[in-house]
Length: 317
Ligand SMILES: [Zn+2]
Image 1 (spheres, rainbow, N blue to C red):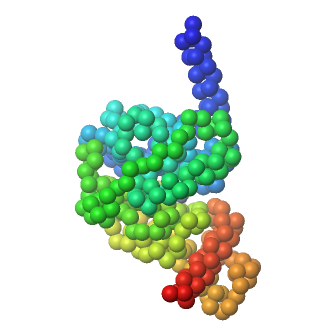
Image 2 (image 1 turned 45 degrees about the vertical axis):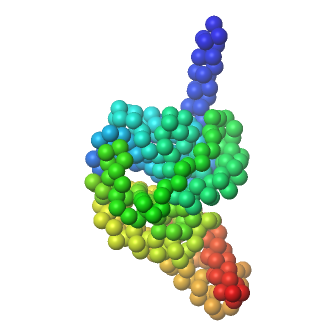
Image 3 (image 1 turned 90 degrees about the horizontal axis):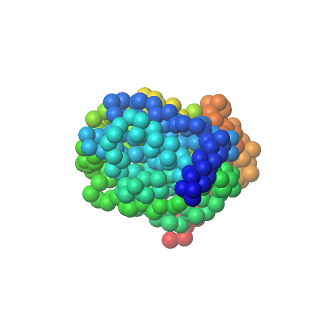
């Protein structure tokens, strides 16, 4: 009787959950054994259920590598269900590309199954510092019901010397290169290159048709990271936001960052205040991208502050 009651309760909870978020996640086949989930080109909202990032998975000979797990437990479960619809092989590794809540808060779905969850040391550090605040922020937008079961999992650290930027590592019978070029979109950005197919999961480093969010960014090293990424033998690009694309579209994000930096540097050098800069923010080439102008406005302010900070730090040795 008790079992039936709890089963009914579970059913009701599941029905409630299904009613307030996207029903199923559709895995898009990107290449042989490689799938991506494409999120909305929006900020996290109750309407989109927080499904605003791209994530994906790679099926190796012996197991599956998951790249990012979504905004909450439910999102992670949907990713897991989609994986199970494509293969019987077990998930053997979860990689978090960077410490933003919409990328990592589905981790516990996999850690509960004993799956290793890993990220760069800088992402691990940032999650320890910020994840609770991020969780509360997302909880405030999506509501407690949507966040039911969601737990913060602090990933284990990838060995920076042994893995990052070096030889490909083999996981689940599949070779992947783990790429960390320092601070870009966030301090811990990780991109994952599947050696067999040349599919690059670019994480937060590449945002297509959507203004990149720069809240935790450093613009110059981000530009440098993208210049490095362009040199890789990439065949297909899975950006952190936006459609699956040809690798040369890395230039979209790169050009936005370069144009933004150039514009703000010019104004900064001319002695314009941040208020002047905020009055002259127009970059018409990017007007059609999602989140313009609000996020672009924040980016103007952010890059201006970065230049100020750099000058101040340069003068106080
Ligand atoms: Zn991000």
